Amino acid sequence: MARGQQRRPMEFEDFLPVMAEKLGGDGLVEELCNGFRLLMDPRHRLITFDSLKRNAALLGLDGLCDDELRAMIREGDADGDGALSQWEFCVLMVRLSPQLMEAPSQWMDQASGFMS
Image 1 (cartoon, rainbow, N blue to C red):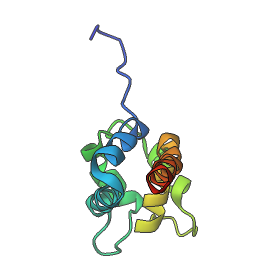
Image 2: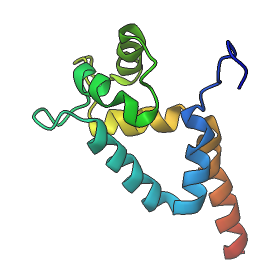
Image 3: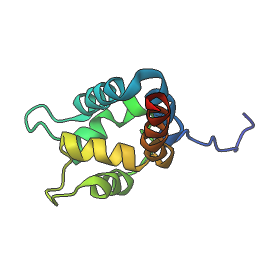
């Protein structure tokens, strides 16, 4: 890469549909749960700002500033407690992947074809 040129970081939604296709629904949920456990604060069993900041490098997010990490937490924080539960994390990950949201209807269409 040329000096001064910024590298475009890969975004999460680049990978989630591929993971879903390869792993299936159950496998994807298991991997999302593993990702949650990797990022969570073990004492609180939540992803907190501190635990996300501490583990951001594991996701290649070590270049993000504190405000960006806080915004990530706010984006998925459905109950307003300032942290992400496992459910909130999984919902956020799926919501960030519009292609993945199309997959269930495609799977239903395929399944109904087999039943005809």
